[in-house]
Amino acid sequence: MSRETLHSLVDIVDEKEIDTVYRILLKFVEEDVAAPDEVEAIREAKQDIASGDLYTHEEVWS
Image (cartoon, rainbow, N blue to C red; front, side):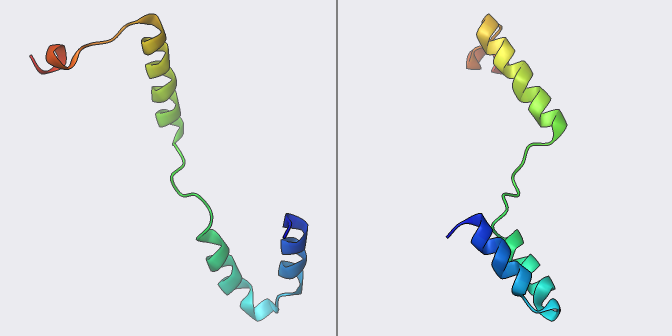
């Protein structure tokens, strides 16, 4: 099956059932998408790792 086939199927769904199809399709959409501030934090963490700016577990908890 292709996306084109899926689009064609959606096009022929009865208008009364569109909400149901929408809710079903949402179940397949990834919800765990990083927020902009999380993306920035990940970018900064990768920079810290690359530059060796790290702390050991012991340093953090001492």
